[in-house]
Structures are given as C-alpha cells and as structure tokens.
Image 1: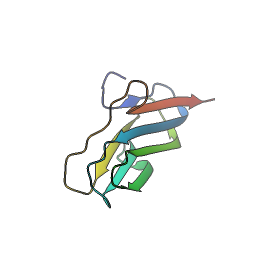
Image 2: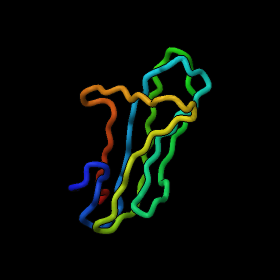
Image 3: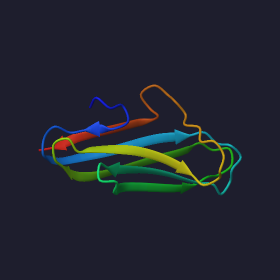
Image 4: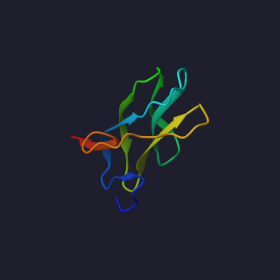
Length: 104
C-alpha cells in the first residue's frame, strides 16, 4: 500500500485482518476506549470496546475475516469517550500494530 493510513490489497480473496493497541492510563476510570477496523466502503468490520480502570494500560485487540477485491483496503481507528487526549503507548514490535494476511 502506498497510502500509510491503510492496508490495500492487490488480489481478490479472503483476508484475516487484525489490530492491537495499548493505550496509556490517565486516571480516567469509566472511560470507554474503542478499537475498530473499517473497510474502504466505510463499514466497521471488527470492533472491540473496553471500559478503563484506574492506573492500568488498556490493551485492545480485534481481528476479523473479510472478503476484499483489488484496490479495496482496511483502516484501523482508536477512540475514547472522555473528551481528553488519547495517548497510544508506542513499543517496538508491540503497539500499535496492524496486520493482514490472505487466506488461501
């Protein structure tokens, strides 16, 4: 994929798609955090939601199987409902990460 905000496929088929993110805690007990994967048509194809606990990192992971055709793509998004800043924990080879694998 040339565009850095998406994973674009070149072959028709079924693909296993997944994402993982660790979100820093911010004394925000009760804050809902959401991780989702959407397709190029704007459909949310996979979704995970977690309610935060004080002084814990939120680990969010979601996976799904999707059927894609050439030039179609998937994107990953992270949201929270507190209104504050969202801080992803950046750890080499751990967070955030997104993957896609064609299933033969």
